[in-house]
Amino acid sequence: QVQLVESGGGLVQAGGSLRLSCAASGRTFSTYAMGWFRQAPGKEREFVAAISWSGGSTYYADSVKGRFTISRDNAKNTVYLQMNSLKPEDTAVYSCAARGGPYYSYYYTGSRDYEYWGQGTQVTVSS
Image 1 (cartoon, one colour):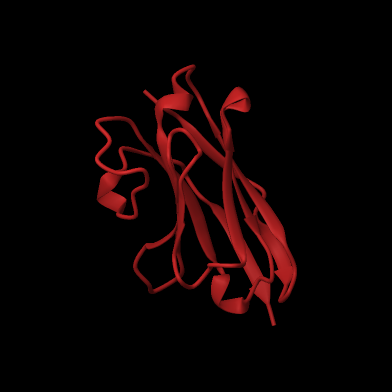
Image 2 (spheres, rainbow, N blue to C red):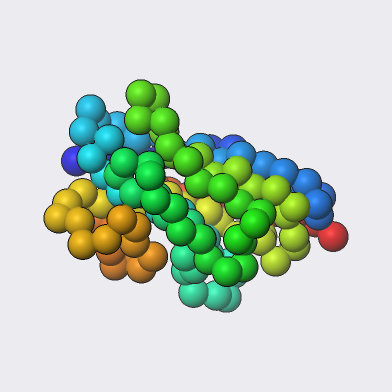
């Protein structure tokens, strides 16, 4: 089993930055591909960013390319989402997700691709 706990959310003005963290349990964390998703009120859960188990491959939704960066530190069992130039439309609950093998790709963008989920952390961007 893998347990995921997100942190780092909060209230920030447009143009500001936040760094989200996702702390994972288990010594096999380094074998899991990871992703970040978000869900705003009244909207479906949306893919944000993904990273391969090795950390060598990343992928971003078009809406966040150039502004967000996903990274991982396997020694700390933690995945990060650095969010810069935040916009009001980035307001949502952000959740991290994990999956083990088999791996058919270096990254995964669908909710159904992931087995484990955190409870989410709220990010609110004011105008």
